[in-house]
Amino acid sequence: MRIRILIPFLLMVLNPVNAEIARAAEKPVYLFSAEEEENTTPHTDEDVVIPLGGEADSSETSDLRPTGFKSFMYDTIIWYGVQWAGRLFYVRDKNQKIFDASFSRWWDNITSKPVWDDQDDFAVNWILHPFFGMLSYQFYRARGHSFWASAAGSVLQSVLWEYAIEGTVIKPSGKDLVFHPLLGVPIGWTMEQLSEWLIEQNSEVAHVAAYITNPMRLFVKNRSIGLLNPVSGTFEFQGPFTISTSKEKALELGYPLFFKTPLPLGRVGFGIEVVNLKNGIGGELIMYNLGLEFPSESQRWGVSLDIPYGGVNNVYDGEVKIRDGYELGNLALGVKSVAYESSDFALTGGMQVLFPTSFTDSQDRLQQVIRYRRDFPLYLYRAVTASPYISSGVWKGAVSLQASLGTDFIFNAKNFEGQDFEFRLNYHTAAGVNVPMPGSPIVYCEFDGYTITSEDTTGKTDLFITPGIRFGGKYSPGFAVQFPVDGPTSDIATVDFLMDFQLRF
Image (cartoon, rainbow, N blue to C red):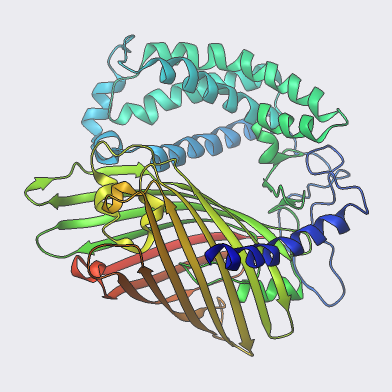
């Protein structure tokens, strides 16, 4: 029965995508070549174009950003910030490896002789460090600096990493100081040359390989920083922020937190939530994620990627205290397509697949996180999940109402309740009001429900209510509070505080 229902649903999802591909085939499209389309979406006289003063024009005819010592130091600050951001996002034991720092400890570390045997494994010393040395070299090169200046930049970033990032908690590693740039620079130069050759080939496969060998092509174009949209081929966050009629409505509908909106919206976002637990369990569950959504040029379909982390702070499992820290969740890749759209209504079908990137849980951290069952497929280690859904929205003036119905087919799910397969039904609705005042705030309330029909234990349904507010268009911060109102989750948690920030395009 489920198969008979699922097949028409998938046809509804994929047919608009196929139609979009067929239309695109009528004109040349260069997704990964030097002949990419113009970096701003074409607009008409009816569209609203917001000029962004001072932003670089990244068109082919514009003057390239000048280089020199001042720009070199500016780029050094940028990449130093990127390294800090990556460390904060990736490191599992943040309390021990980042926050357990003091000025005296840092001073002792950086005034000590670097240690040669840093106790890191082979992959860290001989793969990761040369790889990041390569990336830092390629970043400076993409920003217009010479080979020697870029090589010096790689050396400088290695020193900053060892003395001004890791040095806050551990002594610098002599091995990393040497081999980070010594291997990274020649690898970076080789990959840069290979990427240049690949981009000149008349092959889409070669063009994709060009971006793999030099990832800076995804983030720097004509010496300007942005982001390549792999779906439309445009380079985002450069030039004016064009708001077409469909994009304006997608922006207004972009407030739900726990289900996919019916209209595709280009955005890059970072969110964090802190769940206060009830007495007897301990302190907090902490989840954070990086999310990306890329719309097609027509804004009729789009793809998304979510990278989640889940962790614990002062949490107990019975009498056992779980070690504070975080674990990578399951990578979520999604696609959605607008099946029908009118002046006040939209209906969309989509599919999200969660890959088992959460392959271990040696500290039992994720096993605690899935007790907050709203997103447990994201944090169920070793599990694979397929999640088809239908999402719709209706709007009138400043008021909008959205709803979604979906399912989760969760395979290799034995770490949840001992069964290999779990099936869950998800249902959501949200109502929002666009308040006419500076900052363009949208006040909303979201209702989310989840029923695990395959579960053996009692209490199969969890219900949540989430009031919140979101600001802005291109730069959009959001704040919300979630309350578990019924089900097993309400037995262990009191309130969930959520904050996020999105860059829209």
